[in-house]
Amino acid sequence: MLKFITLKRFKCFSDMMMQLAPLSLITGVNGAGKSSVIQALLILRQSYLDKKYSISEQLRINGDLTDVPDAASLHNINSEEEGFVIELEDEKGISCNVEADTSNISDIAKVISTDINSLERVINNWPLFKNTFAYLYSDRGHPLSRYERKQESITDSRLGDRYGSSTAFCLQRAINTNMDVPIKALQRDGYSDVSNNVSAWESYILGEVIDISSNEVDRQSVEITYSFKSKNGEDINMSPVNMAFGNSYVLPIIVGILTAEKDSLFIVENPEAHLHPSAQTRMGEFLSIAAANGIQIIVETHSDHLINGVRLAVLDQEIKAYDVETSFFTIQDGEHVCRRVNIDEKGTLNNWPIGFFDEWENNLMKLAKGKMQ
Image (cartoon, rainbow, N blue to C red):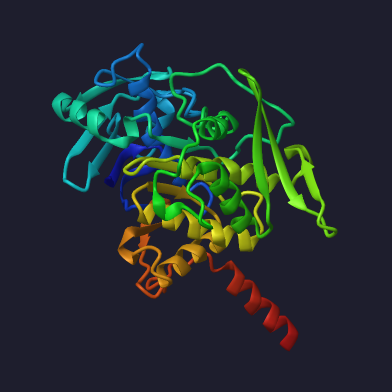
């Protein structure tokens, strides 16, 4: 499991260290560097997977996992020293340190220094570089009447590209093989198989009973059907295009988690997208249970409801408080800084920094003052 990530002279950071846990929540104001943390991890992964280059010699800056113009754009503008450093360390103290040149205006950055032996060791052992890894971008695949298989990329995860393009095929493969959910703690409502658990978890998160099925039209296409009961007790089948966006946006997350092996790594941006606040809260609980049972999860979120779902999961002892790391990114005096926000065993936030999901209270105070005037 990854324990620390340090970024030096990387984009908005001159020198930043962030602690990681089984569940790592990345929060903060816009433009404070949340996505930069995830980009650093993705750059390492796509550089390793792109066999045109050797990760010990070159980093692939712009690729299928990252939208970065060139190496030069990664350099911190306030740093006089050239190059950037990405440093990772796991819970065993094993580290990986890569320093790269940023003078090149191209999508390749030359590696200036790294410990090759250490690099090879982590590549062989860390889930960041394994097939069990999965990453979902904030803008996931939109609902379609039929999902067509796309040309595979060397950087695809088990869910396909960063938009989750292979979600329908991943679900269909689980159905065809009668796959059980690898992590038993995620099995719900007495079901063991992935298919029924996908329906059970989506029903729980969205707050309505839904049955999700898929049909393999041919080797290149799959159709997904959402079924539910009408008021008269009749079965109604609907295509994803006739369902709320939230159904399609949450599906890759659920499928990705329920097909994940223990000791895998899952990164997801904005899992709250297109979800009602109550569903965002239950999504926080779902991610907490997964993280507490062997999947390291890194989440970028703007949702206080999702955060509260995690806090409730801590209170309900579904995850230990020390298994959650909450990092708040903000800008102070022109510097981009990362602050730890601690959650105790009762789900209480002990050091609530200014700007950390306090807009609700601030607005209520303004409204209260307005009524008094």
